[in-house]
Image (cartoon, rainbow over all chains, first blue to last red; front, side, top):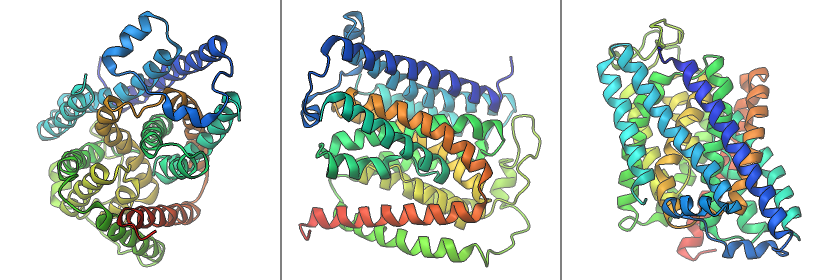
Length: 117
Length: 279
């Protein structure tokens, strides 16, 4: 299958749908579990997110926060895949210089997301 | 205020941030950060984390229709993004060496002048007939079917790459999306049609923001209770914004861009003055 610009568009659409469903589920699950327990919004400052490693443990424990963060992570990863798809397009078009440029962007993005894993 | 009320307000705010972000190519942080910090008294870093999520969500949401309409020049975007990511890494390394307050004030002033120039430039833009040799060598006007769908000249490519590297450095130093610099570089320096400049900047923004996402994530600044409503609101807003964008003429978009960048410049100068202790 040839990857084109439209494939990137379809991938973005999928990632937006998956991310939105996960985040919506997480927010609703949080409200069902906790209700309006955070009565004052300024206490939100005290809440800290999971690291990527902790995220998978939290998912196993069905934490609502984990679903929200997974949704955000899906969108982050979509940016990396976007760079990868672009470099594949350049490779298919035999644009070697552009392929190396695109692949460099992909490697930097991949490294920056998972460097703190 | 209860959590449900807070979530509702945040969703509406993010919705408008998404609309403006998608239409101007700036992401949505400019609207979110001041409201979260000044009105809701949230921690600056948590607000920046939310801004990062909003930039990525805007880029993804708006990117869907911009790609469909062939508005994004992906070859040019990826080429320039290589400079932006190098800049972002340099910015992160320079963070503890250079005086950030002075840089923030200086670039705030540069942005203000650029806004004036951007509005004036619309009338007396030079007619560039042919593309820069780099653009021709890298076939930056073609798409994946090797068709010249982008039938406009791409000039001053080295200058554009240099400006994108600078934009990336600022992004790493000041924790901003630097969409304003990207649109200005594409529009004013490289002479790309305004709508293409805005949508190509939007495409690049998500990747630049993702480069700093790891650090924010590891530091615990992606707060799920803020990131959740922001993501949902911005995605819906960006989808609407991209539809409105198609129907608005360039003049109105330029004025909107100038207004939002003016606010951003004020924000940067204020941030710089805060750091020096003047304010």
